[in-house]
Image (cartoon, rainbow, N blue to C red; front, top):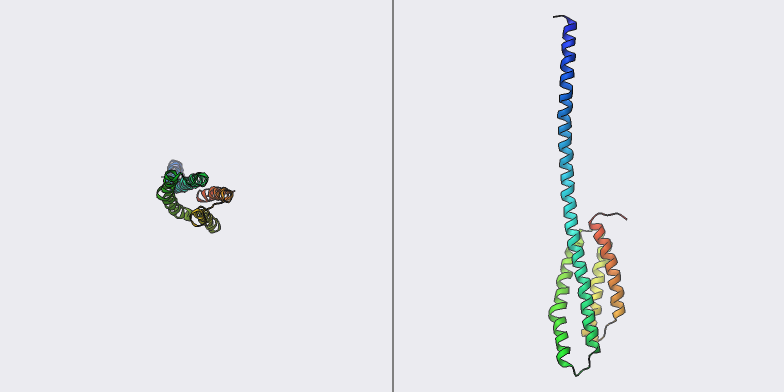
Length: 172
């Protein structure tokens, strides 16, 4: 066998092996890319789930505040001789709305920790406390500032939206 024949055989072997090597490398690279995409999707799914749980609780909190304020407003406008109705509203507030607010507040405190913006977390939790304090003034002082509660609710909702976006890793 001559040197030229050996070179021809090597050329043929290389031309045959090269596509196979490229195919194998392509499969390996593709699997790594697919594995990375799967991990990314799982992480995003986790973010979406927790952000959704946080946002649902923030909406429930907002609705409970509105319902409580509406009941307090109704209570403040009732004549004192409507004791049954007064007692019924106080019972709803004490046994339903306030305990539900406390439960939702607890959940929000857990979910909000998923945001990396500690400043927004502190602001949101402070607003929750201030809203509770405003509503609690009914018990302590017998009055409530509806406009202050409404203003704090608006600030709360804006901040909740920001925190939701932060949990989702959305950038402005």
